[in-house]
Amino acid sequence: MKKIAITVGDPTGIGPEIVIKTLKKYQFPVTLVIYGSITGEIKLPNLKNITTVDEIDKDDNTLFWIQVTKGHLFTPGQPSHESGLAAYEALQMACSDALIGEVDAIVTAPVSKHFIQLSYPDFIGQTEFFAKMSNTEDVVMSFFSDKLVAGLLTTHCSLSEVASSLTKDMICKKIEIINTSLQRYFKILKPELALLGINPHAGEEGAFGSEEQRVMIPAIAQSQKMGIKITGPFPADTFFAGNYKKYDMIISAYHDQVLIPFKMLSFDEGVNVTLGLPFIRASVDHGTAFDIAGKGIASEKSLVAAINLAIKMSS
Image (cartoon, rainbow, N blue to C red):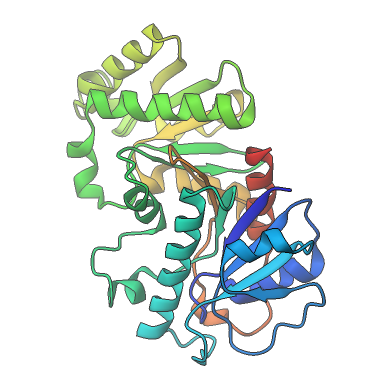
């Protein structure tokens, strides 16, 4: 049976709540291994606490919890240096197990970059963390839902840095990762890809910026020579009027350009997937929501979707 790791994220956010809700309401055809800290007793009859993933092979159970930072009491909605440490330690443990094949995929609940950075200043985000831990040079942050599938050329960087980070080789590499991943994990033999322009009206022949002419169009041409079905660059403002439905993935240069329509269409049900890693990593597409943590009103839909997608990708 496949083993799926789930990290609970920051223990003072909504991560523990949505994990517990998911475990109580749903059953999955895999073994689930939960990594993280939670305050209070977890009342699940089929849950077993373990210290390492090695113990799973000796047990017929399908639900396990590996606690980190044992003994520390966390209060929902009150993040701290300690909650950041707990979130980071869970990521480290799950990633280490994935790299040696002890788990088949990782599903992550949200963490706070700020509170992890109090101990690890170089931490940018979970996507970059997994890339660094696995010595993976190029990854693609992507988003999946029934309504829209999207990928990013850049990840967590400021808008002022986006244009200068785009090169022909970089775009070609990202396109290749996307194409290969859709073929491998989703059994799409010839993915149909669309690339959005970065400037208004996709630059309009260079009138509003040179990135489309200088790097995007040459990257598309080179990718097409490699047999990849990609078109563009398309003006982003009109593209989402309906064109997006024709493609297996929409590729955007930067975060908000495609995440705004994605979350409008798929909020609470979207899944963030890191493509290009040596293991499968899926995640919820929302944050820690400290303001509602502990109130019992957080939706587990995105986590359930992430688990189901990880199962599909690992099958």
